[in-house]
Length: 382
Image (cartoon, rainbow, N blue to C red):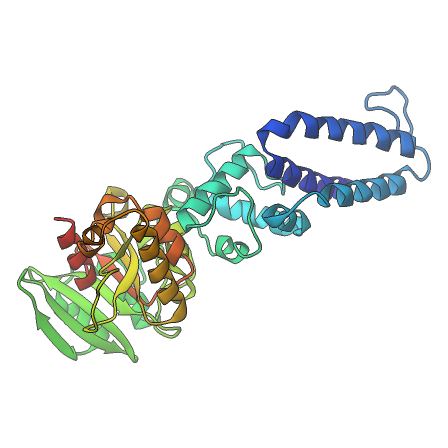
C-alpha cells in the first residue's frame, strides 16, 4: 500500500509541476476527491475513526484503485514531466541526493524522498541553468546521466569531513593523478621531473612564462613555469589521458574524459564563463576553440580552471555555429570579431547552452592561465 501510494504521489507531483502554481488549488481538489472515492470504493474508514478496522480485501483494493489513479493522472503529462512520472522511485531518490550533495538544494527541509516539491524544483532549475539546459524544473531522460555525474560540493564536503589527503606522495598512484594535486602547484621543476622525465619541448614567452611539454605514458602534459615555480598544468584529454577534478573543486565527478563542458559547468555550480577565441572570420591558420574558464576564489585556493575543445568534430562545430548565430541576431560583426562576448557575459547562457554536450578535450588548472586563457584575458583587458 505504501509503495502504491508513493508511486501515485510521484505522478501527482509531476502533474503539479507541469501545471504550475496557478493550478495548485484545482490539483489539490482532485487529490481530495480521489481520496474520498478511494475510501468509498474500498470501504476504508476515515482517518482517526475510533475502533476502526480495515475490512478484508481493503489492502488489495487500495493498491488497485491507487494504481488506476496514477495511470489516469499520468495520461495528462507530457515531455520531461511524463518521463519523470514513469521513472523508478529509487532513481528519483538517487537523483535528488545528487542535487542535494552537489549544493543545488538551498532548503534545509529538502530530503531525498522521491517527491519533487517546490524546493526540489528550484534545485533542478538551478542545476539546469548551470548545465546549460532549459529550466523546466523536471529532469528529462537525457539529463539523467548528467545529474548522475554530480559529486559532493566543496561546501557540503567540508561541512561533513576534512579534505581528502593529496595523492602526490602516493607512489602507487598513476603519475598524472600524482601531478594533478593542489600541493603540486608552486613546486620546483626538478621535483616535477621525477614524475615526468625530461621535457620534450620547451617554449619561452614574453610574460616570462616558460612551458615544458612532457609525454607521460603517451599523455601530453604541459607545465607552466614562472618565477622558478610551476604555476599550472595543461593536459590533452583522451579516454586514457584523464584525471578527476576532485582536488581542485572538491567535487567527486568522474574523470574529465567522461565529462562534457556542461558537466564541468554544473560541477563548478555555474560559475565558469563560456568563451571562444574566435567565432567569426577565423581563417585557416588554426582551429578555433570553445570552452569554459573559471577564476578560482579564496575557497578554491585561487586555482583557475579551464576546459575547452577545438572546433573539429560535429558536436563542437554545431555548438560553435549555434553560439555564433545567436550573437548575429543581436550584435554587429565588430562585437563578435573583437571577442566582446567573452567579456561582458551578455550571451553566456546561449554559449553554455550551445556547448553543453561537447566533450572536454583540453584541461588547464593553476594560478595563471593557459595560452588559450591568456588570449581570452587579453581580449578582456585582464
